[in-house]
Every structure is written in C-alpha cells, then in structure tokens.
Amino acid sequence: MRARRFRGAAAFVLAGAFALAACGGDDDTAADDDGGEAGDSSLPVVLGTTDTVTNIDPAGSYDKPSWNIVYNTYQRLLAVPLGGSEPQPDAAESCDWDDDTTYRCTLKSGQTFADGSEITSENVVHSIERQLEIQHESNGWQLLTGIEEVEAPDESTVVFHLESPDATFPFILTTAAAAIVPMDYPADELQPNDQVVGSGPYTVDEFDPTQQIQLGVNENYAGDREVNNSGVILQFYQTESALKQAIEEGEVMIAYRSLAVTDVEDLEENGAERGVEVVVGEGTEINYMVLQASREPFDEPAVRQAVAQIIDRETIAESVYRGTVTPLYGPIPEGVPGHVPSFKEQYGEPDPEAAEQLLDEAGVETPVEFDAWWMPDRYGEEIGDMFGEIERQLEDTGLFEVNLEQLSWAQYAETFSDQSMDAFDLGWFPDYPDASNYIEPFYHAESVVNNGYSDDEMDELIDVMLTDTDEEARLDAFERASEIVAEDAPIIQLWQRDQIAAVREGVEGVEETLDPSFIFYYDVVSGVEE
Image (cartoon, rainbow, N blue to C red; front, side, top):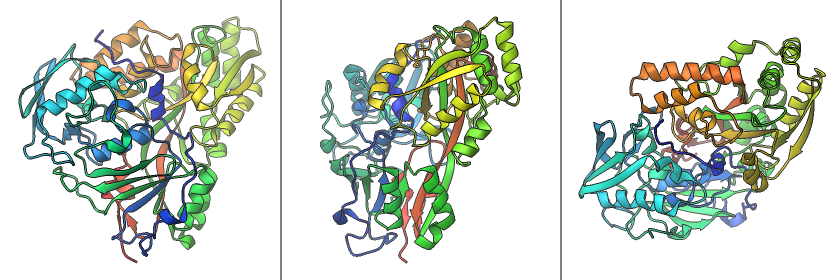
C-alpha cells in the first residue's frame, strides 16, 4: 500500500460550514454605499453568507469558506478551470512526470505577489515545507504527506519527489493546501489573517470574519483569470432568515451558503417581483450516515444492511428537502466519473420485509436499539427534520428503536471519530474533482471516520485508484469499491446537493462559477447597470 495522506476529523469542515457568524448587514456596508444599486458595475460584488471563515494562510485552514478566499487570493502551480475536470497550469507554465514518483513543474516568468516581490521556485518549496512543518490542526497539510522531498534546482523549476506513485498528485497541487506564499511567511507559524499576501486576482484589504471581509483587485496579478468587478465584500449573517432578508432588500447582490429550503422555495416562486433570481449550479456535496462497525449493534453486517434496506431517500429528498437535494445511492455522486448507484442495485426499493429477513437469518433480536447523532448548527436547519424522518422510517418497521441525539459542531468535531457514537451524520465536499476523494478517506482501514470498518480488497482497490494511471483500471476499481460499500454498508449515503445562490437582477457570472469544483471564483461575477 502506498504512503497514505491520512486526513483527520477537521477535514469535515469542508462539508457545509454552517457554524454561524455574528450578524452583519449594518447600513454602512450595504451594496449601495456609493450611491449606486446592486448590479452597478462600478461597485464591488457584495456576497452575503452564513459561513464561518477561519484562517486564510493556506497552512492554517481546511474548510470550504476559508479555502474559497485562498483560491481567490493565491495561485497554485495548477488549477482546475471553470467547467473543467482536469488540472491545467496556473502559476506553472507546464508540469509533467519525469517518472512514476518524480513530478516537475516550470513556472511562468514575470509573476509577482501583490506586494511586488517575485515568484520563484523557492516560494513553492517554502510553501510546501512550511505546511509540513506547521502541521496545523485543521489538517489540510495531510494532503501533502506523500511528498518525500521538494526541491528548486533553479529559479523557475520545482521538482517533487514522491514516496510512491500517485495518480492524483496533479489534483493535489490544485488544492488550497498547495497555494504559493511569499518567503517572509514564517516557516513555523501562521501569517496573521490581516497580513496575508498572495498572487491571485484579489488582495485582502479588511478582515473581520464576524462582520465583513473586503477583497480588493490585485493590480500585480499576472495570471489568466479576467477580473470582471472592482472587488468583493463578504458580508456575514447569523441566520438563514437574515440572509434571505438581505438579498430581498438589496443589501447584498448574492446570497450563497446558505438559504433554508423554504426560503429557496419562496424566492423561486416570488423572487422575480423582488428583483431576485435563484441560480442553481452542478454540485457534488454529499451527506451520509456513518454506522459504528467497531461494536454492537453495527458490528453485525446484517444490522447495517437492514438499515440500508429500509431508508427511503426519495421521501427524504421530497418531504424534508422539497426537491432541493438528489437521493444518493452510492459513495461517488452523480456527475463524477466512477459513479455507480450500488445501493439501489443491491437493495432495490425500501423493503421492511427484506430487512426483517436479513435480521432473522443473522439471528438478531429486534427491536435493535441505537443512538443516532446529528448537529443543529451544521448542514442547514433541515438536518434535524431529516433525522426525524429517518427515525420514523426505521421505527415504523418495528425492527429498530432509534434515540436521536445532538451536539453542536464544536463538540461533535471532537467526538464523532472516537467510536463513542452508534451512528452519526456527516457531509463532504471534495478536495478535488476525482472519484478517489470519495473513497479513500472513508473506506480505507485507517479512515477519517474511524468506525472500525476494514476490508482487504477495498484497500487493494484504493491502491489502484491512487497509483494506476490507466483510467479504465481506475474506473473498474471505483465500480467494485462501490459494490463492496453497498454489500458491507459501513456508511449509508443519503443525498447529494446542487449549489444554490440567490442573485439580484443584473448580476452575471454566478451560474458559471457554480461548477463541481465548489470554488466560487469571484472574478467571473459582474454587475450590469440597470
């Protein structure tokens, strides 16, 4: 088995950071501060959100809201372009393999950071080495642990020596973990958030994640992205209802992450009369329930299979989420090469009688009692309703007795991987758009969910996914892994969700950036004078 990039519990911050920031939206920060209207191209884009930003030094974050700012303020050697699925040069002129474990990149010439300092190969070496030196608790650095050594033989060349072959390494270089920083960033501690300097399209001008973050246009940016606005204001709100009110009243131009399902429904029906349109983009966010295979009752495969046989994803999608999510029947979401609806193939339609037969044949006494955990401050306010529906579905069969439990994310994040929870909810955004990122972290013997599940064949398949450059061999591995996941049911996928934003009339470019990469590229968004 190749050296693994083991990602710890904090990785799950990537999935829907709904821990709430303090309410913003004071009159002096509204979209029309300068006397214009939302959509006036002379103004910066004003984006409202309930997300929480942590650190925007790449060495200190592994959460979607923070990474999104990193993607807009720093460059990486490679990036996945809008609408694309393969890494392409960003700060690099070219990158390619010398052999199975040596990856060489040549930098473009004439690139500088926002402060005017030159970007050289030494910056790349410094950026990678400080990630591995600091080893911040957010655990983004874990993506880079397959690197044995990185060197700069000259000012424009970077050479990565890997511990073992890794077919996904170009994708890793597209992540925020591989963002390029100046040499004056400390080697052993984080750069303060209000002093970060990158070479991307934007600069960080003001940083207050409880109220507002202001991004200015980087006049020294020499990359390929075209900036279509005069800056970005990120406005933070405490509640989803406050965010909805802000977009309706024109206080923000875009409302993104997150509006409640009922708010989206209302805006779809009535938004036009308020100058608001709901924009939907392709998404590969997933939500799933982990079953604790290390002990009773879920150490018995038949119990896990019975749960999988009963849960009705269609009802969850329609009655709880009102059609804003799509039922997910496999570990890899639809839209990602390698997707197989293996749970539907294995179990068919929800069938309590088939579940009862599974338990009877295994000699399991019913009702099976277990605790199911979820978070009220993460993944949206509908999550509690979803677990209420799961409880109803399982208990109506008479085969299960479910005790619903909840913790705030701060407590949950410290607890879910210690094997104390019978079953627990989590979500996931991909680190990069490759199917392996939905398999390796969860089903390897050393998975991030630490639920006691292991399978030798699965570990061998993961090795193929990560090291084999034959795409057909990788697709075969994804298909077989999906079959094993359904057969063993250590995790039950529930839904995948598109990206949703509400935008004011005249704002353009939002739909374009809502692609499977889950990177909100601010530079493509523009306003049009009404």
